[in-house]
Image 1 (cartoon, one colour):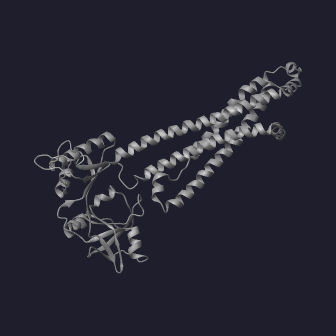
Image 2 (cartoon, one colour; image 1 turned 90 degrees about the vertical axis):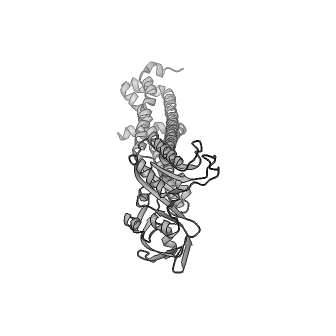
Image 3 (tube, helix red, strand yellow; image 1 turned 180 degrees about the vertical axis):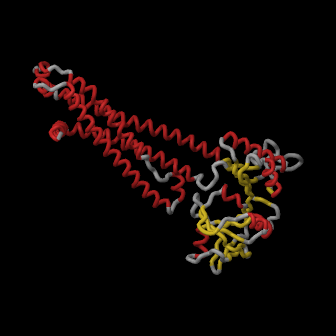
Length: 416
């Protein structure tokens, strides 16, 4: 076996440049395939990070100004949602809704203070179901609950950046902060997985409306539907929009008066784009590998031609056709296996390095995390690519190997 390997290496050594160039083309092919797959995965992870903090089948509804005069009302009228709108939507679409939450934002009176520390943070009144629509991770304490709503409790949950800003190293649980001069007890700390730097505080919706003169007003409504397809979610979206337009006497053609973001539609569109990107990546990667295999086939043909006399001598002294085929195929497999392995290791290593660098960079830039994050290639896919590469190397070397085994010794030894 050792003599056999030495013979193969000796043959390749005599044609170092060709062997190196062929090996490089094979290594480059699998290296690029790994990089392309990793890049596609990185883009997909970035896209999914944009939806990480919200339900995949949600409808976010907000009001705008009318663009068309209708039913005796002028254009430019501001639509104002109320609790009655929320009750109507919940009642009329009970079979289509999993979770519903109204939301009321406090504007112009949202200074948040604790002792000598203060900040101008976003303050929102929400319902308990909001946690299942705008997803957050609770780091300590609890979320807003039904009793908070019914009893108009003055409690608050704060984001981690708010906690760090106001309390520094102090434990905020059970402490009181002031929002617009009104004291609220801290009952929970949360982190937004989509936007870790978000400085926001949540208080019960009912308390917000009562304390800050919101009456029965709502800034927005958020719905998590039970739709499984884009078509179903779109149907619910249009029905909800039409219901609200009728309630607020908006012209049927004035679709701009009420804004709705359909997250399932956006998510599926993004998935479709990345499915196309993945297909493109595979096509380019496979074509690159094929180019490397063609290179292996070419060098095998040249090697067989240059070693015609040697092969003739081998056959003259009793070498069988199978041994000749095995010799040529062994050289082909050795080149593809070694080169493919180096390409695989280099590709996976570079992806790991880039992933580490991006994770460190993402600590200071969440925009990067939402665009391109954690590029990686499945190790199983990489190994299968290597196996296919070696198999293709066998196929590429078989034709010249078969020709070599068919050489007649007298023809091979004849001086041309």
